[in-house]
Image (cartoon, rainbow, N blue to C red):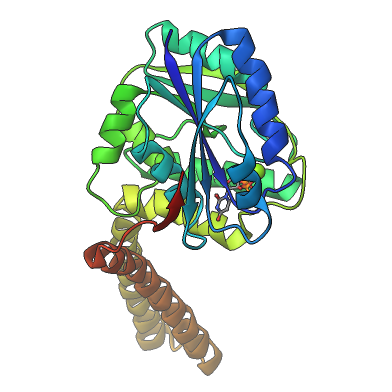
Length: 305
Ligand code: UDP
Ligand code: MG
């Protein structure tokens, strides 16, 4: 019998925890594997930790960890991975968007000698705007970075022990699961899933956090934005030389005055905009260096049961 560790990051999910554990229990009875559930309470302010503490079961075992404050989805997942001791880990959200019914399929694929099994969404019951933004993110991410993150794949996945061992060995402080999971390589298989809407409450990840997460993927795995600044600078310089020559000729030989004050002013604003944008791209990289060089802990544990 294999041991499977199910890792659940939890931030203010009081309505769903008990139900999710019950659902996982029903699933575990079908698959006949040993299941250990790791619940990482990421500094919830509702009753999540009370509920987690009181959960007990004759069939399932638990690892319960409470952070000292809210550190975020990634720290909660990596905390689960760092405490992992089983044969495979399954990462699943607490809000029922990742349906536990797919767990047996993930395990079956793993047993066919696959090291990473990803849940690939064939349909996404989410808002139109969010869907468009997510699509755009994947397009940019995969065009500009060496590490290809498969489209329509989120955190819901199964990782073999050797993958987890590798992931937690990465020396960087701020880890990004979607990127690193692609970076490590190994045999990857897919299980097609339908991503449901969140069952209770509002998304716990704010829009700003999602943007931060995408920048983690882009800036953390690619130098292309830096190269783009160079290319942009080159294009602007060449065009301005050509334009200067053109206006000079028009002026000298044909007496046409092309440039007026409005044009001068708009070009200054335009170029200042480009410069500010470029500086902010540079700033993104510097802030990553700044964060990493401080080497502060990714998360802090308050209680562990
Ligand atoms: N979560 C977390 N810390 C946070 C935000 C979210 O542990 O700061 C958990 C949350 O409880 C859920 C999972 O991460 O189990 C995904 O969060 P959410 O559903 O809000 O993200 P979305 O589905 O919108 O990407
Ligand atoms: Mg969700």
